[in-house]
Length: 107
View 1 (spheres, rainbow, N blue to C red):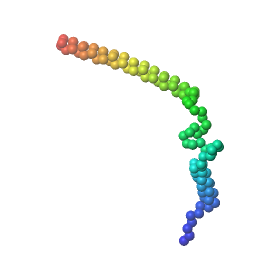
View 2: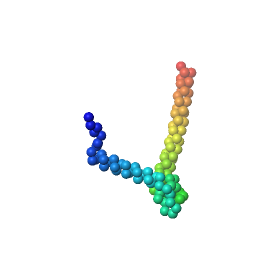
View 3: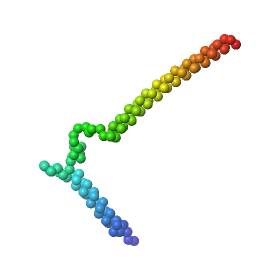
View 4: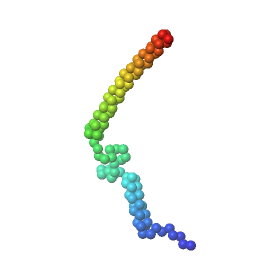
């Protein structure tokens, strides 16, 4: 019986490309740093050349903060509304109890 593990030309090309990409990635990761012209930025040291310090807030950040503020205001209004309804319910329950006591004393 013959061992047929060959995937044909497509498999060979795919294996070659995958091996090339893996080798290139490992070469970049393990390349020694040169003196002046660094081949790569060290991991964690400003990898994309961004300026140091905090960035000014963009439109998405500004809109997000506005939404958070609006949500906090809505939550506060909802709490106040719930407190008012709770007080009205407590007053209604107390009035019902008082009416029950008066009816009980009459009857």
